[in-house]
Image (tube, rainbow, N blue to C red; front, side, top):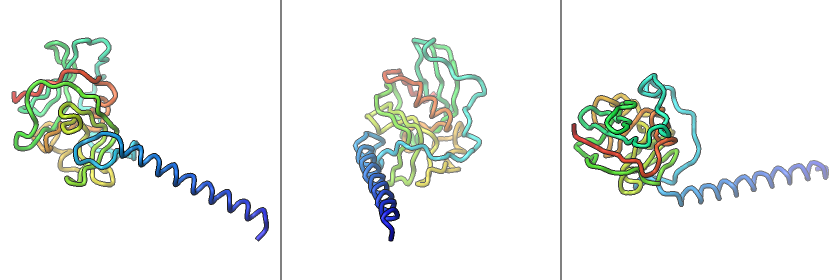
Length: 197
């Protein structure tokens, strides 16, 4: 084997080892992040999502610019399976939702907590979700996308329940687009009111 070929082989091996070390370090960092109870380490990657009927936002109109609405808050209606972006008593935007089966979504007044992330997977339920934001018990009760399987594909059953019936374990499911907007724009400290009506 020529010395040039040996040098190239050493460079390739060194690059491979460096890649493994970086991947290990990133995984270790991700596992220290907070997330959904019983969740596996949060992976801060965004795999390609299947295009589905709920990949798009609930309404065709533009999401509200929350900077223009200092009194904005979120109202979750368990009866109507909706999340309303409110400003004082005015509805700014409506999102289809699916809340907890068997009344497992707590009612009352809460606030958006600092915990949020781009993806989680819970082996116990064999479900994951994109774009989660905590609103109770610091990573236990969340707004997040409709559930995914282990390969990050949206599950068709819970997706079809949006706006129709409860299907979660207590969290508030949203469409992929609506969950992403909440993740990006709803600030920590915003009021959340969950009502049976």
